[in-house]
Image (cartoon, rainbow, N blue to C red; front, side):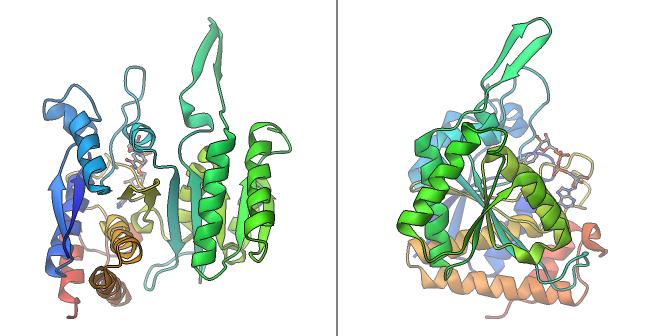
Length: 342
Ligand code: NAI
């Protein structure tokens, strides 16, 4: 069985880390055929009049599977975010981001093993902003019963599938009584009605941030609305070694797009300095998704082989500079390839 996945290299370090993932997948004989499409500044440079070309969207809809490098969002008016646009157009309503301590990667904490689930489609990222007067601008926070319920159900189902892991909902319903209140109500209702066996807690987001940096091992699955999920993802990346080691997946009803948490890192782009591990780990999430959703055991086997290979490389000190090593992007990919076992 070979699966077709759309590969969007993206901007900045995107093409470099995407090339590394392609090289490791080819060496591991992963059952995935990549077809490349553009998004971001790269799409404009390739002649498109949009940072998110229709052809890219349609190809992902056709194959229902994609892996994406980071895309630059130019600051200022006239450019909408590729990532927000992609999530909306493909209705990718949940971002799932595992945060796990890795061997050979120094950080302040040991044994971190948590997952952030972020509602991906609304909240303050709805893009509803208005200039009320010359000096006053408002940004609307949107919460709908349907989207809150959908992500709550998806998260509890996921927690159940992982053997009943604890769910902590981060919120600010004490201040945003209506929007965060609705989010919390839906989480509570799904828990009480469908998953009363799963340990569940409600945590105010500021207190939760403090608890996270005191002892991240007290959390398991953290469910957040859009903005808190965005911030918590980077905060949690910092708990285990940074943005170079945190992967992610965006899930919709039947489409999944895998991408690292990090951005296009223009400060190191084109210098062979980027850590490709976050995108490689996102690729492993894609293989695990194929095993789970399409019953492809071969994909699951390759996922485990690649995971074992990168863990061996890290343990032996073969790593990129952002996590204390000396290797460049290509050399790290080669170090992983050298440790693949059949
Ligand atoms: P960033 O994640 O690109 O970079 C933050 C810092 O982390 C930089 O010092 C960078 O060098 C470092 N870093 C990031 N990824 C790394 C990697 N794989 N290996 C080694 N070091 C790494 O965040 P920033 O600077 O805020 O955003 C840059 C651009 O990326 C912006 O245009 C932003 O909109 C976009 N962005 C895109 C995302 C996506 O496409 N999913 C996500 C986040 C930001």
